[in-house]
Length: 304
Image (tube, rainbow, N blue to C red; front, side, top):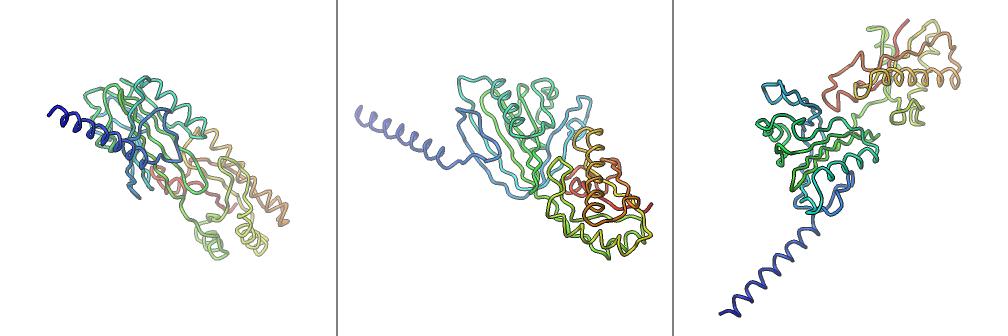
């Protein structure tokens, strides 16, 4: 009987080891973020395309979930990962390493908090109701970050609890925009005195026009050549992510890059064009969604 009990225990232990090995072997990390060294993956769920609430601030005086937790509503493909913390590492150390790793990887830190800064302990369940995160506690640590990419932004939320942590990764597809046409330019200028110059593309966070902008520049230059009496403002716009002064300068520099291309490459008279930048001050859509922010990152032609 003792032998049978020992055999059963041995088989059970072996089964647990094999299950753990199988579990670890089939749970793949997300390429956008490297898990903390020594963490053990316990689950991964590829949710697919969904709307996601990303917490980017806390208001301790807020009464409702939405009032107490400031958020961005983003849309895209969501992956949820859960990990057990290494037993010889503190939650503070794990949290600090994620923050440093995200910043080093080119992510913009939108918000981070720890303990009481994340809100009163009695209201910690709000995090779960809004985001679907599970490991919220009064001792939690949280960070939200965003990486701007040409093919669509990547948002990451990391919630670190004393024994485990979880990571949400949402990849949002950039809004597809068409090529500006002579008719769209003519109609917009005639009816509204302004037109969006679709098809102009810039390097991320820079004022460098990409080569794929040439078809749009061809159309814009021909429209100006066909209307020689027309003088215009070329106006740059951004979303509201980032500092206001930075976005004002970036939008102005991007407008100036368009003016430079039109005057240098297409011989449009410089006196007809004036580069201006208004940053996020004249949005076309709400900045609360990725699609809205994509629409707000634009260049317009405005009649002078």
